[in-house]
Amino acid sequence: MVKSKASRFADIVIAGTCLIIILVCLLPIVNVLARSLSSADSLIKGKVMLIPAGLNLEAYKTVLSDPKYTWSLVWTAILTVMCTCLSVFMTVICAYPLIYTELKGRKVFTALMISTMYFSAGTIPNYLLVKDIGLLNSPLVLMIPSCLSVFNVIILRSFLLGIPVSLRESSEIEGADPIDVLLRVYLPLSTPVMATLALFYAVGRWNGYSDALMYLKNRMFFPIQLLLFNILNNVTSVEVATQEGFSNPGLSETLKSATVMFAIVPILIVYPWLQRYFIAGATLGAVKE
Image 1 (cartoon, rainbow, N blue to C red):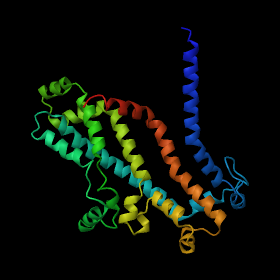
Image 2: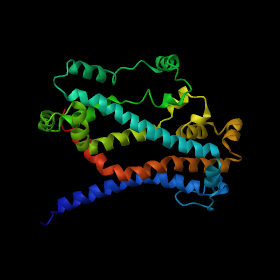
Image 3: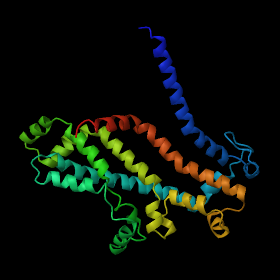
């Protein structure tokens, strides 16, 4: 079938728009990569844009040889895996009972959960609560308070409601209890949405730093994003700059860029493997309420 001129023009416009969006997203990353690979003098003189000037790997050697950076990366990876597993588990056990119409108070429970998306106690009450339950300055404060997202519960609940009830009923006739139905029927059919939710939780935890900033004092439990936050915002302080390993302005810029790259790369590696699940899960989860 031959396309009309209008159709071909529309295709060109769409392709051009997509290309522009890709460049807008990609160019900042390329710039950061170029800065991390450039010499300190080139950065100070403003010679670096998209291509490294005076190729230098000193920043990466500094990051990889400094236990502070390497441990922060390892700890953030461990924390992300643990939080993702815990959050997915909590989301499943919260969303699954809500698909049973015979559950008394189901609508009330759903309304109460949704209300938390609109109303919050605030930062100070949350801090006092964390302090009273003994989570202050504990690594658990990075896991427990944010282990469940109501938005993700709604996505999973909508997806599970889209699975034919006849599958559940046939399993129940054969003697399966609700846990067996969950493990043998719903979870095997929920791979796309589970991968989507896992990606949501993993990206949120990997990029999160505000909870660590408010609740942690022990630098051993600082995630990589909080370390990066301190580097980017406190480098003008001589005391903090020395503590973070900066000796001159140019080196500080390359170190900042190298640290940013270390924070970006893991997500860039993981996302392509989950992209097809992400698209399918986000679409299917929104089909039915």
